[in-house]
Image (cartoon, rainbow, N blue to C red; front, top):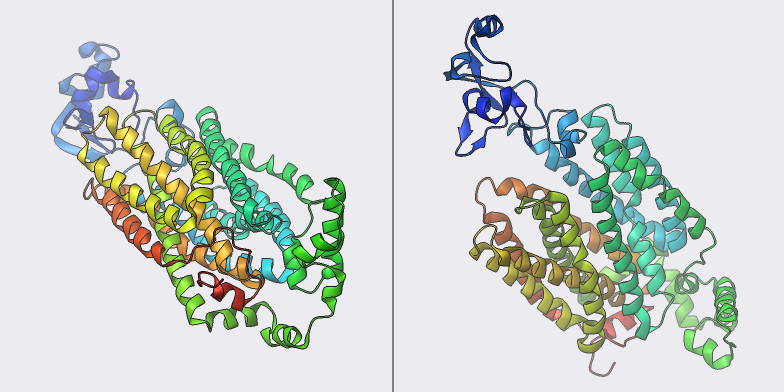
Length: 495
């Protein structure tokens, strides 16, 4: 009886395990054991073997058989692997498929989330997505088999796909150009802090079912905060709901003790007089034909279409490297939970540095340089001997850089496209990005073919994304575009 994380009690302890279990070097195999010699058990009961001992005479090293039961370390006793015996090479893919199914759910859900947000509002998507995904997570904790768990893993991701992006766009559309980076950074800081908290909770709660419940049950409390939150004033204005937008502006101004005068109203373009659109604007709004028509009109612009394709690849490269490094962190020497916590904890200072870099150097140079640095760190990691002190440091620098890049691409994407399709196109870019995060859970399996293969793929995809990002226009200190024409003019020398 053997298994990953096998304790010394297996087959009579470490001394007896040498005779009971085949070894590859110093490590015992987790799925094989030597066949017991016929009638050896009876001889042991008659006193030929000491209690707790497993002498060579009890086993035949000429015959190797598969294990039927496994003993796990305390931290793995109530995991998915231990509950459904996912331990050997022939079924280890079932562990990595969980992450892939999650990302397939995100891939399918993001387009619907973006469409819902641009059609019915940011707040509407955020509230209902959050409520449904919490329900899916709790139901998943009561799964009776792997298929049920994977089904609700998919539904959880599908309905929750737009939660972060909706909150992100809602925040960015409430602030001016000089505060957008700060708003995005604050949201990303909470996201990274949540990952650190997840690692701590997982370390303390060994049972995967109770881990899910401890995460999703408190999530319902957030609905109490979302209910009174206002809708995006930019989205309301893009839909012609100027009275609602003006009411929100006045409430916020009153709370902040700001007196709204004509100058402020003119600056934010949300006064009631905007109801009297000129004939050209009316015709443009009518011809768009809603969100679907606005998307088609956007893609008819060659400049915006090429920008969208480039943006989609950069998203894919970022998610592939970002999640790939997080998942592969547990393959490093040391405690799995501590490694994960350190790799996510490094994101907090990275986001603070990103705030400074984006305000100083702009979006394009930050995105390109950090993706190239992440690529260089992946290559450097391969050149450092295993368990060397510098190996973890280089790994953390790589995660530091790709975290900055990921934060930049979120803000950048929101700034590159018009208001009426902003969340849809962010959702589509993120959807293509999920191709990278679908592949990321499979990269630990590639390490069984070649140890250097995962990091090599991370390096190549990251440096290509860094070079491609140089073709984006700079958006620093630019107002968010509300129309296709304004989006096209970003980067023009006269703009």
